[in-house]
Structures are given as C-alpha cells and as structure tokens.
Length: 471
Image (cartoon, rainbow, N blue to C red; front, top):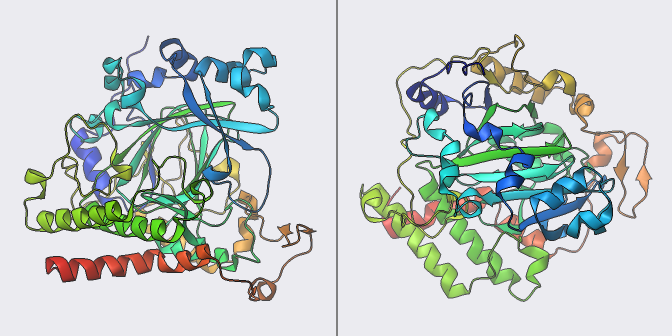
C-alpha cells in the first residue's frame, strides 16, 4: 500500500487558516491516512450491532422543507439498512420493510460517536481533528451521519461554533448561504431544536409566493467527495443532501468565544418557545432530538446560568470555574446550560494573514455554474479564487437575477404550488410574488417575529447590560 501523501498544512497552519477563513472551504488532503476513512457503512456494520434510530422521509417535491417532526422513525441495525439499500426482499430488512426504497430515504443522523462506541473507545482515535490544530480532539467530540440517496438535512444555521465535516463514503451536496442572507431565508424556531435556526423554505424548490425575498439569497454550492473536509464558518446556513446510494460523514462542532453570548440567546429562545407552546402537542413543535419540555423554572435557571457564565468569562474566570464534567461526552451543539467546554484556542488574530488557496484548499464561492462544475475533485486543477474575489463575486451575484439559479435546481419560475394545492406552471412576476397574503396570525407566526435572530440578539444584549454591567 502506498504511503499517504504528506499533509499540505501543519496543525498550526490549518488552525490559523480556520481562524481567518470567512467563507466555506474544502481541505482536499488533510484526512489522508486517517483510519476513519475506512468507516464505510459496510465496515461499521461489522463492529456496530446495536439498534440505531433512523429518520425516514418521502422522496417528493412539496415546495416546503421536510422537518424532522414530519418524518417517520425506526430502530434498526446497520445490517438492516444495508440490505434495504441493496434492494433485498422485505423479510430481510427488518423495520425498513414498510418503506419502499424507491419512495423513501433513510438517515441515521447526528449520532454521537462517544455513545455509539462507548464499549470500543479505541475507535475514537480513528478521527484525528488534532491535525487541524485542535489538540486532543477526536471521535469522542464528533457525530456520525449515515444515509441513503436523497437523505437530507433541512436548511438551518447552527447557533454555536464552526463546523468541520469529513466525508467518508459517497458524496454529499452542500448548499450554503452567508449569515447576511438570513432575511432572505425566513428564519423560524419551530420546530424547536436548541442551537438550530431553521429556514421556512425549501431552498431547492422555493415557494416564491410565500417567500419572495429568497430572490436575494446567494447560494454557495459544493459536492463533497470522500476524503475531503469541509469547513463551515460560524452562522452559515446550510442544506445538505446525499447523492449516492450510501453516504457516511463525520463532523465536529468547534467551540468559539462568541458561544457564551449565543448560549444566553438560546436559553431565552427555549424559555419563550416552551411558554407559548406548552399546551400544544410537543410532537408538532419540538424536534425529536430534544429531551422533552422543560418547566418554566428550569428554563429560567438555564437563562441565569448562561448569563452568569458569560459574565464570568468576561471577567476571565470562566474557563477555570465553569468547565464541563470530563465524563460528559456531549458535543457543544445543544449546550445552553451555561457550561463551557475546554478552550478551543480559536481566537481573532489581528496579524495580517493570506489564505493559501490552491489545489489543497478550495474556496466554496457563490457560483452560477451547473451542478457538474460544482464538484471539487481531488485530482483536478481547480480554478482557485482568493477570499476577496469570492466575496466580490457573491456581491455581484446578489445583484443579478436570481432566476439564473435555476441551473442549480432553484426553480424560481418553473413551478410554484398554490395555496389550494394546484400547480402553477406559468412564470411568476416579481410583482405577483410580492403581493401580500392575508391570513390569520398563528402562534408560530408570532414566535417567528418574537424569536427572530435580530430580536434575540438585542434581548441578549439587554440582559447582559442589565445583569452583568457589560456594554
């Protein structure tokens, strides 16, 4: 077997790059030699025999996102999943027998590796995030994603940290949007999942009668290949879909200093959502990833803990006095209790730094090319742009007609679904899209306003000003 190619960046260089990157980018050879690259679904099925919860969704176009509250769920083994993806007869696929592969996709998403392999801790060392400069970080702080073709994650942004994603098997297409596009993506906190802000629209088949502002969104699209690592900056929106019969990914959310303030906002959001929705069926508004509805007293305790932790951090005592229990293997994504994990050393460095884009670090730019052109292939000579050039092209793309994004499945004028379910095939003018739709204001409509990211940011600022003296 040939020796793995030498890494293009040292751990210190890789972390410095991540600190300064302001857009998504693909590292093409940083995972060379990682044992985790052997974690195909077939290989994992040999060592992982426990039942895993799969999310199942229909393969259909509805002009609306398929949230996790609308999916079906089954407990199955990886062996059952593999037989189902191979088209075996129904008796061999366990719980999947009720879901024809031609009509459904399946996704074992967001599985904590620390829990999956708690009796095989040596597996943690197969994932080597330390090579990106995060000393000691491995599979214990990571999650595993195994899906079939069509499996997807609704468009959302993560409130905490930045994200590193290793593609192990198959390909996934990422549709990313910068934080500045938040008004164009119609944020919502229903369904509620701590640390996830969802978009109300299907970014592949948007309903422009309801969401005309999506015209201004700037899609950054990339197809991630096995062995590549995608860096997703803080607060970048993303929709992710599996392109191949089986896909496997591993990711880790990297803590950032701003997470202390974000935890306050998440605690406030949870308190408000639970207060408004307490009398409704949680299955209709609470993501299945959440562990029940907390009481108001519990939620307010979380608010106070988060504010206190933020104040202590500002006084320089947070890392000494509020570290998490070493036995707590949860990743940071849903932690708004005020507790802070170990320092990730991600800081803002004012020293000049030039991002070394090239064949081993590919920026994900705002593009108008076809899907085929969007794949980042390991062995090709990519047309590399500077970070500044990508930013400039993003601005230019925003000023062009969004109808051109049809080439990337953004069906702005081909079809829209009317409120009565009829399909409209004629082109829709901007004037038509901007006509107001009068309807009764629901609780969710009210929450979308009260919990808009801009409002939560201001409420968080007021809380910290009044209760910590910070300005």
